[in-house]
Length: 191
Image (cartoon, rainbow, N blue to C red; front, side, top):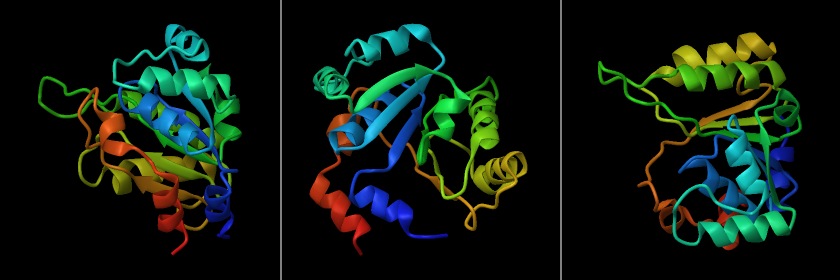
C-alpha cells in the first residue's frame, strides 16, 4: 500500500465518513470537521440527518451544538441517510454504531454486522475502516476482517487498512475527552 492516506491526513484531503451519529459518532464527526476534514455523517434515522444538516446537534453535550452548526455552515460537515454511494466516496470510514448488551450480557453485534455488509460491498483499495463500536475480544480477527475481505475481494493490510478504536468515553463528555488538536494530529502522522 502507498503512503497516500498519510498525505491525505496531513493536508486534510482525506474524506471521512462517520457511520452512526449518536453520542460517539456525532462528536467524532464534528471533531474531524473542526480539524479541517470534509466529513459525512451517515445515519439510518432521517430525523437525525435533517437535524444535523440544519446545524442542530441531536446529542446533548457541551459545545457540540456550536461545532455542528459552525461546520455545517462552513461546508465541512453534512449528514446523509445510510448509502453505499456515500461510503464509496470516502477515504476513511469510522463505524460508530450501537452494540447494546443483550439479556445474556453480551454485545448485540447485529447493527455492526449490517453496517459492515454495506461497507464491505463498497470497500475500495487504500480505504481505512476504523471500528469504534464496542466488540468482544477476537471479533476483529474472527468476524470483521473475514467479512470485509469476503464481501470486497480485498485483503486487509494489503489492499485496505483496518483498525479498532476502543470506545472509552462517557456519554455527553466525548468532546472534553477527545478534542483533536491540529498540532497533535500532525505530530502523530509525521513520525
